[in-house]
Image 1 (cartoon, rainbow, N blue to C red):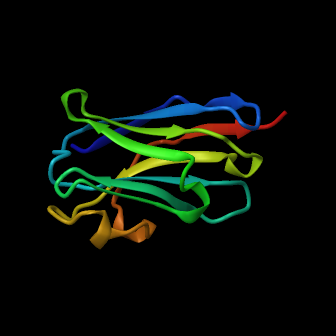
Image 2: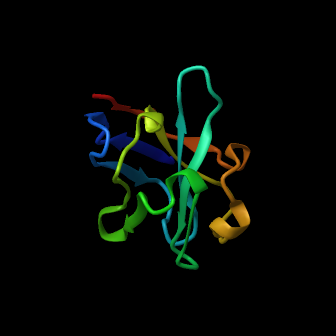
Length: 129
């Protein structure tokens, strides 16, 4: 049974940092891409970052490039999203998700939410002064 559990959200001032964690179970991180999405109030869910261990690929949406870093710790079955230089517009509920497309890396899967079948419950990130 695939399960994804996010943690690490909270409130931070602009310019601050947070690290989100996603505990993954029920599937092999070597074969399935994992992505981070976010949804702000009144807005559609947006893909933020993707990582695929099978090809060592990561992708980030333009708005977070240079500020967010996605990584995997296979030994702990964890996926992380390090968020630096946070801005007010980063405020959202953040979700991690994975797919049913075995062997397809982020370059093939992309950040379209329809490609991802399993989702965590989300963690709130609030950036304000």
